[in-house]
Amino acid sequence: MTTSPTPQELVRAFHEAFGLDLATRPTSVAPALAAHRQVLLQEEVTELAEATESGRLVDIAHELADVVYTAYGTAAVHGIDLDAVLAEVHRANMSKLGPDGRPARREDGKVLKGESYEPPRVADVLRAQGHEPR
Image (cartoon, rainbow, N blue to C red; front, side, top):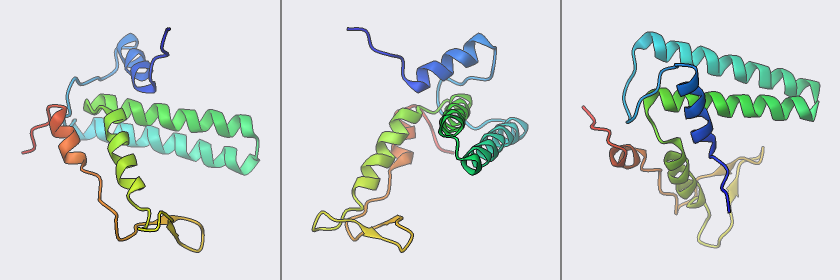
């Protein structure tokens, strides 16, 4: 059985093929590169907003993928294994369920942190990836 590459693997291959910045372990980057990545992400989020306004599902799907692709690219530039960070954030998000197994919600439907909530331990995940905080 052949497994499909993860989004992280696809984006890292793109960065390698095009000679884009790519770190092998979590690291800070030069301010200019960090600012550039922020501009790229903002452009994609703006395009997603425009697609959402149009209501065209195919455009929304495309722009969502571009946001994720660019976010993974930013993680690659920083040498972050974003899959591992996402897994830890998911673990924390699942702890938002109350003792009765039900979520608390804000009026607009956003899930709120319950009394069982445990914040994500992102620093631990990055440390496991080789990050040495200063």
